[in-house]
Image (cartoon, rainbow, N blue to C red):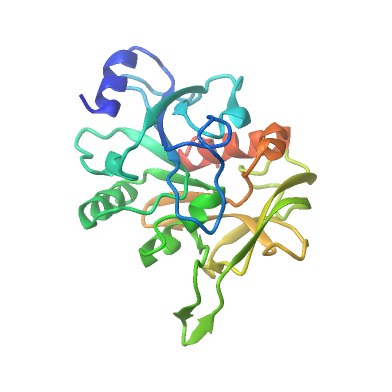
Length: 268
């Protein structure tokens, strides 16, 4: 039985939103950490409205490496679904009723059929929250940059008539996070904070990102969080999210929860 159908059957009477996560290991699951520039697997969450419900409650999310960011949040429950082939949840989307996909991965493999199925979900208005190293995900599929608004470059590329150098990263950097628009539903009530995390520099960005989070650290790109629309989908990308320090930050926890709610069109 497909995981989303099993989940629907098991939770049909719950009047809240639900989600599943697929994940191939992280430092918080005992499966090893993620480090660029290698191309590893990862996970993503999907939030859905439960059958039968006018749901304005929380999300149920299958367990992934960001467990520390949202455990204990009322209305959000984490469960776990491992993926063996990076993107097989997009293999068959018949009966799909999830309203948000939250990526947390460096996953790369996505066939043409899965790409088209994913795009069809975005045409339905399914939301996307993209966390941390998913910026390096599906790196050989240019359209994914347009979806989430950015791409980590593993090697120099020709883009817009010029050669862009490869991106770079640094671990365990103390950075100051600034809120560019405190009035947006994703950042509402979140104040600037300092954290230790992994930084990326030299990523490619879409020009129509609406920036919510910035930093001035020299090892990082300035823009580290933004929202955008792709087809009928709301998209929120937050570059932060590598290690225990950021997951322990209440501001990050609030950002992730509010990003899920906004992309699910429960706010704003």
